[in-house]
Image 1 (spheres, one colour):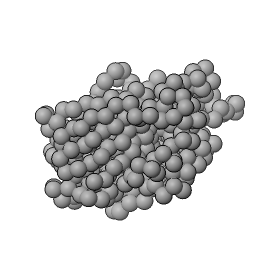
Image 2 (spheres, helix red, strand yellow):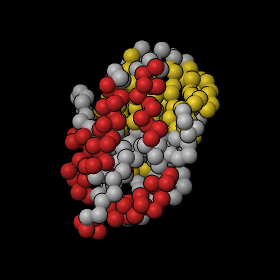
Image 3 (cartoon, rainbow, N blue to C red):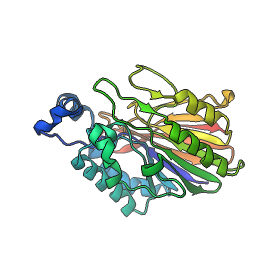
Length: 285
C-alpha cells in the first residue's frame, strides 16, 4: 500500500532592494513580504520535515507549488536546498510550480523554476509540456500539471491551457483503467472566493477528470488553509488542499495511505515545537 506526503506553499523568500523590482509585479510581493508574510510564514518548521518524512516510509513526497515568493533566484536556491534535504534522506520528490514561482513575466518566459527544479518524465515533461506522469507503485500513478502563469498586479490565477488538455487526455488514456491516478496541481479544482484567485478553464479540467473514473485524488495548494471536498457521488475525484507547510502559527501537511478501495488521510500541524497528527479520516474511493 503506497503512502505519500503532500506539502504545499512553503514560500521561501528573499527581500530585494533593487530598483528593477518597480518594473514588474515584484514590488508588490516584496512589500507584502516586508509588511505581512515575514510574520505569517516561517521556514523553521520545514527543517524538521526530512527526518520525520523518512520515518513514514513514503512512496513519494509531493509539493504542489509556490516554493518561491517573488520568483527570485535566491528564493529558488532556498527551495532547492529544502528539496535536496528530502532527497538526501532517500525520499522521492515530485513538485510543480505555483503562481509565485512564475511571479513576473520575466520569470515565466525564462522558466526560472525549472533551472532549479528540472523535470524528468517520458513522453512529456512539465518544463516542455506542462504535464508529466510517474508510477508510484502498487497500481497508483502521479500526474503533475503546470497551470501557472504570470498575471497582473491584482490577479493570482492559473490557467488550464488548451495545450495541457490534449496531453492530459493522452496520459490518462495510456494508464490502464484498473489502475488509479492522483492529479497534482497548484490551483483548486473548483471556483471559490475571488475570481482573481481561481483556475481559469477549471470547468474543462473538471469535465476531463470526470470522464476518467480511475482519477481518484486531486491534490493542490494555493489556499493556505487546508480543506477537503468530496464530490465522488457526482463523479469527481476527492480533493485535498494541503494548506501551507510554512504557515504560522500552524503549518500543515497531509499524508495519504492508498489501497484499492480506501484512502486514509492524516493531517499534521506544527504546534510551535513539533509536527503532530491533528486529524485523520478514511475515505472510500
